[in-house]
View (spheres, rainbow, N blue to C red):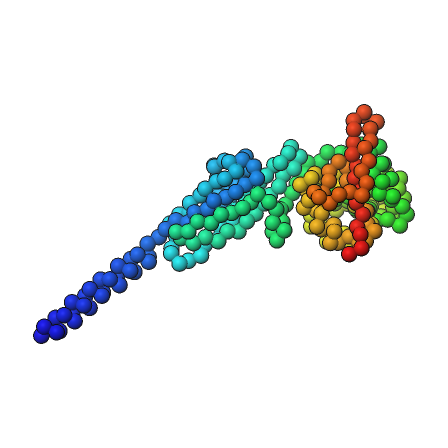
Length: 273
């Protein structure tokens, strides 16, 4: 009788212990995120919801989460390094209840590259002409302008430089409309193709023998690996003002424009791979 009573007591105690463990396991906990941003005034959304925090380091907590489960959050930062460039940077972050994760959004991730939009600022015609000369545009060239604006560069490449084809790409429908109209007015619409699209997502750059640019340092850094991968050896790249990080140009020219302002244009060439 005594032995049976002891066994019952052990069963009861064991049952209470297991119930306590189950309660502990089911207790929900928050996940913490420490987000690192390149600028203190960058805007940030989490799952599409705007956040109010500012600063280059921002801390967030999730609602209470089920333990043992993995949750995913999408973070989107909008960064404006200057008054003509808007960069959109995304991260997908996995979190666990009761854990903290650091999310570094200070640099572009080549696996999930940034999107960038550049405000159109036209290059003066005399500087366009100098860019075409620096690129050595001739009758056998196919010239691309990534972020073509009103189309002036590819139109000049065909009309003044004698290129057999010009391709302009711009994300702004209004600029695309203007560029097409300008190509028609200048009598080169049969040799100039204007496309609406993201200049960072052009798939046929291997056709280009010359690429003309006036975008921004941040954009050029995003474009650099695309150019180096897609362009064939011997292709030339000419940029008005902006460079490509530590990829040094083969030649840089300093010009005084007809407007009296000082201009820089840079030339790179694709070497054998």
